[in-house]
Length: 218
Image (cartoon, rainbow, N blue to C red; front, side):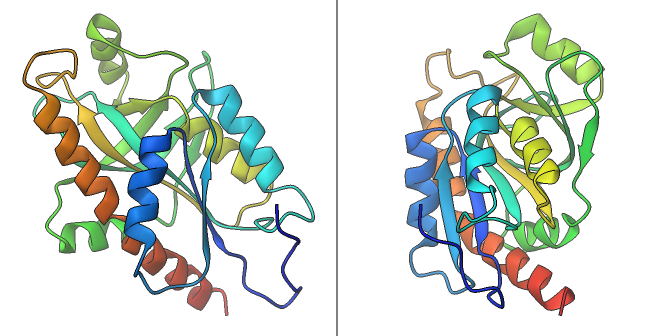
């Protein structure tokens, strides 16, 4: 990893995702977008991998130490009526272990506004974590507990970022399947393509969010 930037330099934005296809989509959206420096980090799948990767990326002396963090990629929607390509902006994240505390995302209003201004369907609420793919009755149970969507890395990513001193955290996920649109069913390939295209389109909004954070702290 590159050396730490000069002490007076603004920290870059750190965008964390789990899968290669997610990083491919995000990096595609990054090209041509104007904004402060950004690093797209592939963490690997699952909460443990996300925690390890963020711990290293935010360690003292790392190029991304002190960076604001966005957890991004795909997620499973839990609420009826959600569909592939919808965007979930977390109001808070909660880990998969019983009794896990919530991590609030206090700076997410500009993200919600900017995404809606692009004509995207945006939902905001609790994004919960899992350590496996969630389906069927388990998905319904999480929704009954107040969760809007679920993925395996966002909660661990944001929890680690807060512990490592990130000044702001957010989670922006694109729904790739939902109660009425599960990927295991025939005919859902189109939904996956839609989700990929939306994920590719959101990166410029991360630059806008990062810029607003820098301006507010000057």
